[in-house]
Length: 255
Image 1 (spheres, rainbow, N blue to C red):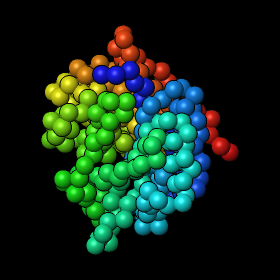
Image 2 (cartoon, helix red, strand yellow):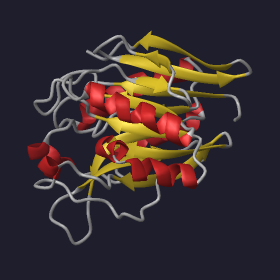
Image 3 (cartoon, helix red, strand yellow):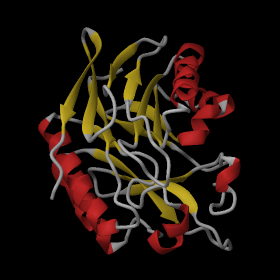
Image 4 (cartoon, helix red, strand yellow):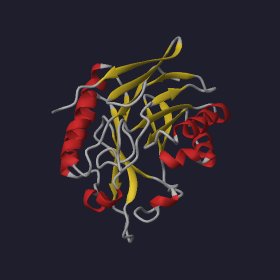
């Protein structure tokens, strides 16, 4: 695998406030650029918060003018940036839970969560089972997952079969669910030989008291780096000549 720096933005979303959340995202992007990051991943529904009642009013698409600052920063920083947002689902009343990826060349892609929790079926539409979730950063192939996707081994198995070296999970993981989530992610590293990055919300969202503790696990299951708890931090994992290493950086948020 090529030399690479990837990072989880452990952000805390303002419920339903796209503009405020874009400002928060720009602060994380600035911190990631200072750290020389090539790929920055935000938590599930980072631009809206995990707020079921508010999602219909927060639906976004890659060309939305409110997201232009993020698309511009991806070009300026030469960084791939993955953000979480509700996405309109054609012919469906409920939106997808989506991830929008902006790339340094100005292009973008959209991935929609395939595996919904039972509680999500009342406010979200599952993504196309055949939908693509793969791209490459500096020649390193990776696959995206959104929270519950990563709890389904076939999802990770398909990613590995498609050649992914890294499995990237945008998540909202509560304190009570964290141990089980991490156990599954580590199982993916052992079974499929992929490194796994998990970006978790850094505070309460939608009534869930999130655990924070975003982290990166190397192939084989060893923890390389993780946030010590909650709060807004940038968790950076770097692959180089000596293998994987990591660091955690505090992020100052706008008032």
